[in-house]
Image (tube, rainbow, N blue to C red; front, side, top):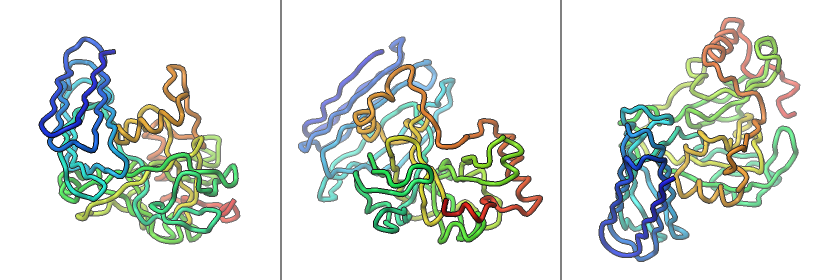
Length: 318
């Protein structure tokens, strides 16, 4: 593993090329309150190396994604070039970042999603570490970590795959969700039915929201305004009530962790060091079907029979 450290501790341009080292690359970018300028980390999409970048930013600072450009190459996960604007605690723009890394897809809630807690429904942006949220399996559990990523309207227009999914009130069946639910494409939704039982030998499965598009009341949003995606993590993968519908929390599988900004990933790895172990295997709260064809058949069977995606009324608030 080739390791690089960039200390962006003043004004100016900071640059590092990390490609073609013959091994996977780990880059840590430490940004201090004195930083003003630009940071660029460049590699190659075809050198066969996996590049992981960690950003450490001061408290109260934030990043806004302005560009996400997948590069043609041979690596898995694929290599993507990202551009960010960096804002300080006063919301002043202080610099830009251009970073290439092997990343995945966003999987999270949008601002305004109401999460059921011990205090009743709470907007996800108002949740904090330690707050208790209701889970389908284990009662109230504390939030271990919460973070967010802003995707600009311009980037959404140029990168349609980042546009959110709208699940209209009642689209899942039995009044679920209770109000429109807006999530990222890869955010998994709980499906419960006898059809799932016949196909997967379990009544409940988790399916990405994008796979539900085309069902009545479920569509890709034609977003033009910035979207803020929130990630919520408990001590294990759980299913929580969001706008009255059952959906997943952040899953700490390797691909899921690559879907969040590098500085957030570092926070999670600090809280849960076990996920960094080579033999760590995350446990999903429900079966996550791995074959796309079977997921397609599952949704088609619901449509053909008029079966609700959440078909068991008695289990709505289980």
